[in-house]
Length: 126
Ligand code: HEM
Image (cartoon, rainbow, N blue to C red; front, side):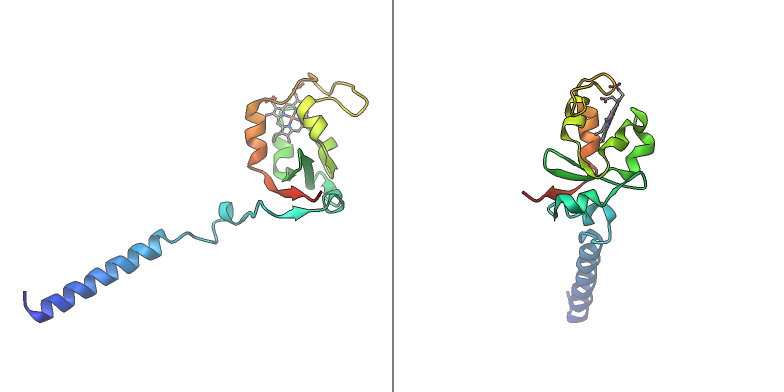
């Protein structure tokens, strides 16, 4: 191989490698990757998100923004009880603090738990 051909081949190889790097580099603008689930919120901060249009809740120490899920909730508006509050008991037993059943009074299904995890935005401070 002569010298110019080696130079051109090296240049082409470099362009190819750079192109691949640009394509495969993690995209920080991808919304699924920008949610920093290690953020820590105080309970007071959670309490400030207590409406149907802005609904955060605490379940077993995790903080969840469930706003987008409210209209899809199979249990209807009962989910609004969770907004701005620690809803661990409500979610895990479907009973209220007086021990009264909300719906079946049974724990939510694993499907519900999996959906919940997608809405995690952080955890509550001790
Ligand atoms: C914390 C407050 C909540 C309350 C009081 C509540 C209540 C209910 C009720 C009454 C039902 C109808 C079934 C029954 O009668 O037991 C239901 C079903 C359901 N809820 Fe909730 N819910 C809450 C939060 C959530 C959240 C945060 C999610 C998901 C991320 C969720 C997901 C589901 C699903 C998937 C069902 C269908 C049945 C099942 O999979 O367990 N709920 N809920």
